[in-house]
Image 1 (cartoon, rainbow, N blue to C red):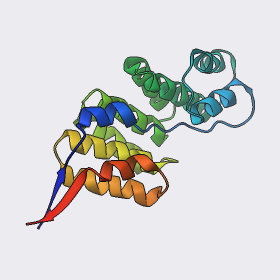
Image 2 (spheres, helix red, strand yellow; image 1 turned 180 degrees about the vertical axis):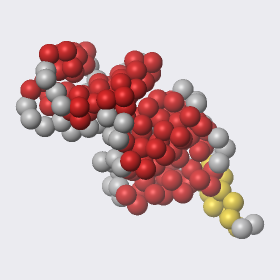
Image 3 (cartoon, helix red, strand yellow; image 1 turned 90 degrees about the vertical axis):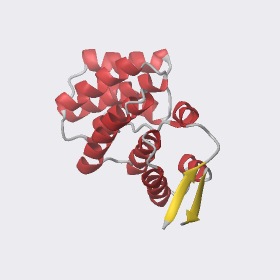
Image 4 (cartoon, rainbow, N blue to C red; image 1 turned 90 degrees about the horizontal axis):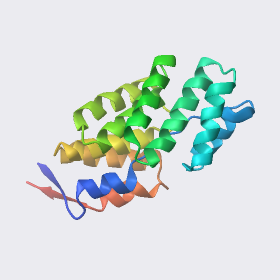
Length: 184
């Protein structure tokens, strides 16, 4: 039987350094698209959040784009570690578009950052079931949750799945370096 052991970094350090979030692409011009581009580029400055605010307040958006704009603003807020505001945005996105997986995956990431690992797993699993544009990020966050619950085998397998889906993405590769596989 194989046993897995994680060595090196503490889970808290992994959570602080590398939660993975997934933005939603909004097309069609206007402020909502600018908000989307900012989120996809990794921005979370006040100006970018204000663009999202203006898009939500002033633009006539279809339900998918409105939900996507809430996800994008939530991603920015999550990057700033404003977890309550981020969660509120993800909740709103889910209310508007309950079949958009990104809302669940990102809400799960917030819960994991708050060390609510079981709750985070439920949302990430729901997001994966619905489908997301970047499933590797969902598997990465789910691995963090499994680690937080001391389920090293499941964490290892999810980090491996993230690498399989995105072989050039470094965070899951770096996490796997902490594991040692031994035979029992």
